[in-house]
Image (cartoon, rainbow, N blue to C red; front, side, top):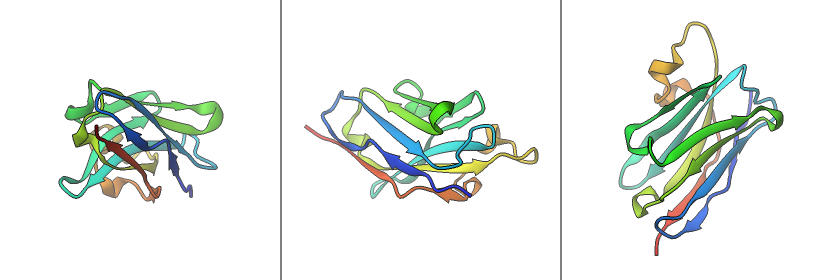
Length: 128
């Protein structure tokens, strides 16, 4: 079991960038896949990006502006966000999925129910 902890949120002007981090003791990426989600009052919770052992996945609205990657040496996953817009204002969550042969993560990376382990979230606010 892992407990993800997000960091790196904050306030930024439109067009700015932020890098969110997700760390947890025992969060090794040979065992776990990672998903980033966000939640706002206007849109509810939506999937942003997913990573599993060298494979990345993005929801269409974020493909050109966001990048998910991991650093194995420090058991940390990241979400690099560029050209931020006011619509990107939300609480961002990192979630972990224990990889199994039975689950096709490529097809189901964006399903909340695939992730038993969730962080508390980090707030991102984009405004001028």
